[in-house]
Length: 125
Image (cartoon, rainbow, N blue to C red; front, side, top):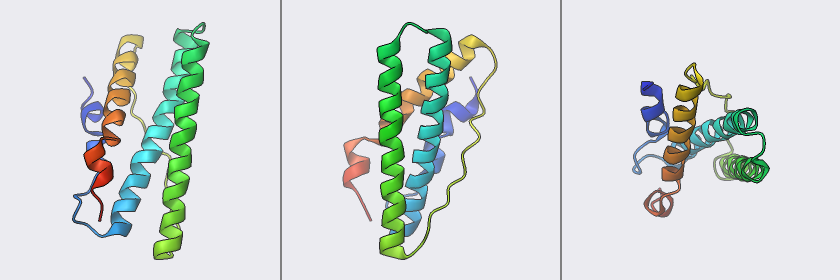
């Protein structure tokens, strides 16, 4: 499997002991990656499973919530640190071939869920 699949989310985190502004920037990058990934996964699912409209709607809803979270983080950066946040759309490095793309999507979805673990949310700067 592509090594990026296993490390793409983990590499975007800083330890909890860092300055809040740096942590918020890292969270913003994770959310940008998750949003771009969910959009791509939704596109892929429409192509591979065109009749799963409920699933497509659920993926779109989650992507929308991720975009809202990213917006909230950007607002926090502006309000607390007077720092505008600019996040580039990440390069997803998707593998070629249908099977590998499905593996990638499954891996991204499962690793994205780890981002919302209670211990990551409750611990803060």
